[in-house]
Length: 71
Image (cartoon, rainbow, N blue to C red; front, side, top):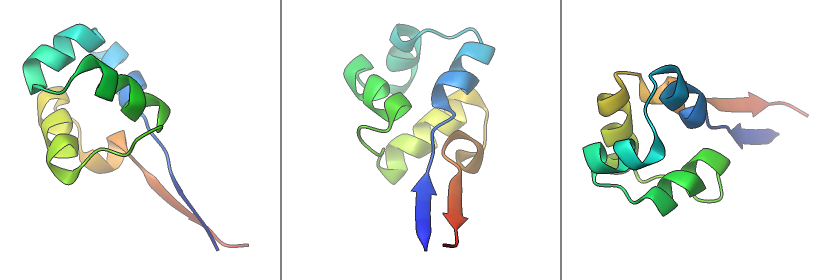
């Protein structure tokens, strides 16, 4: 089984015309963390995922979809 977490954060953010700097100010999450979350270098905590989803008015499951790929 291959489990995969993906990130649509950049896509959702740009569709709403919000820069990383603006999103950082709105959520209190550093720009560096946002960069990591967009590239999935780091996975956001549940609290940060909730803050991002609420700020972007998007479900967490849409920002960070989880795919279970059977091998």
